[in-house]
Length: 191
Image (cartoon, one colour):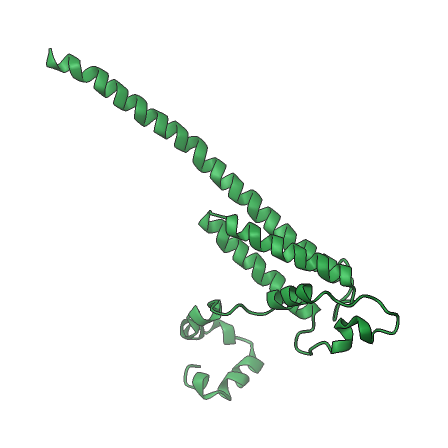
């Protein structure tokens, strides 16, 4: 008779395990889908920010000193940052970082960051047509986004350059690169 007493307990245990499995079967795909939607929207926010600043991608560098374009771009960047924090799936976080790097480069080139913009570009008092100048917060947000973040590891630093050179394929038919590397003591002995 004691065996019969375990049957309801086992039955309850199996029901509980089944319920947990069913909940997991619903929860994990939902979480992944939610993360994917956040990733898609975060990427779209960066695209929209760039389009706003560069006037639909038609302007190269520097972008027009249009107050509304700068404000809109900064708002999209800030929305991107909020969305990025909500992404929980590790793979989606990695893709988001890659998207961010792509768009950071586009902003850097658009701003022609190697040559700083002069005060007259930003300041409304220096504009002869008395247009409103660039709103300072938007300029700070956009220029900050275009810079490499402090503390961010550069993926190039973790590359195994020695192994790449040992394979030798990178130098096949690439006379200019070989000659360049031979001028650098750090690489001369490796090729």
